[in-house]
Length: 240
Image (cartoon, rainbow, N blue to C red):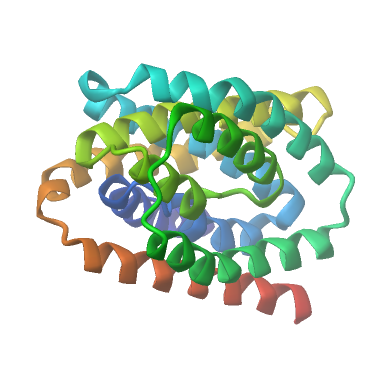
């Protein structure tokens, strides 16, 4: 029953993230924490996130902006490995609290970034990749930060989904390798990640038909609701 529930949530999360470019980790992570605990849930989600991003690349691969991807990844990949190493030395209780507070805090941060109407250059992507990569290693999902960064660069719809997914893929691969090197990504954990990731992949392909129909305001409301709900859920787990 636990696996079935994870698959159902993963399918929904994969569909939503395939439409808005992020959200799969935010939605699925509380379920994985409840089922396996935070220290095991994080490497499981890292494997699942690799599969989720790969599916979005397959759906939109013709539209990847490779210059933007390279600028973001060259700093983001090593930073993600450093963040993952930091995570492994933190206590489980602190991980729950950190992830929950981070997700809730991203709602006003994202709105603040949007109000400034910034136009990002390649060097902005490189700087953002370093910061977001490190945070990705620790808090599972930083989509609410990477989404506006790539949108400010000028990417839209398929080009945005493809480029953000390709850039994030390198970060999550780096994170997964770090977990494996330090013993957190065992064969059993990897298998759980593959199961969760398979549902995210199916959801991403379902989502493609809806991408062109999504209104910007609906995207913002959807992301705000997902982040607050997931953050509150993780804080409840930490303090209960």
